Length: 100
Image 1 (tube, rainbow, N blue to C red):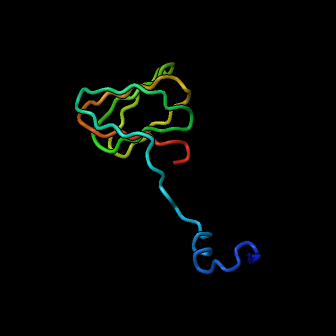
Image 2: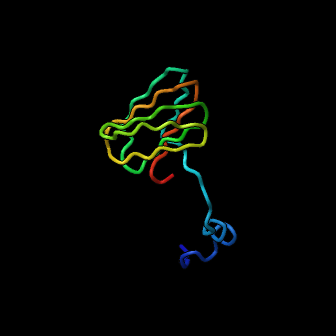
Image 3: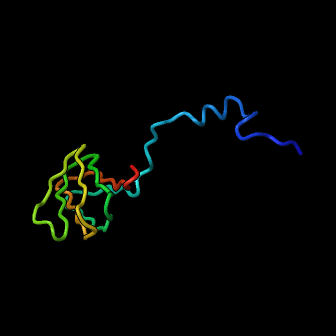
């Protein structure tokens, strides 16, 4: 057996792996909803809903304000309470975790 210092002998692969990269994590969930479709979730603190297409009305239990999301808009809950999204027209809604 040969003793090797940490990182010695790994060459380019080691240096390439050490470079910082911007990586977009996979979404936690994706919903393709028809117009008038709904989804109810408890996304947790730090998670966000992102509208990729269509229009959604989003409401959170305990929050008196309703939010309208269109393509590119985001909703970040302020509590761990239930969130309901209603598709005002056919669309795609993505749940991203805190790390995203």
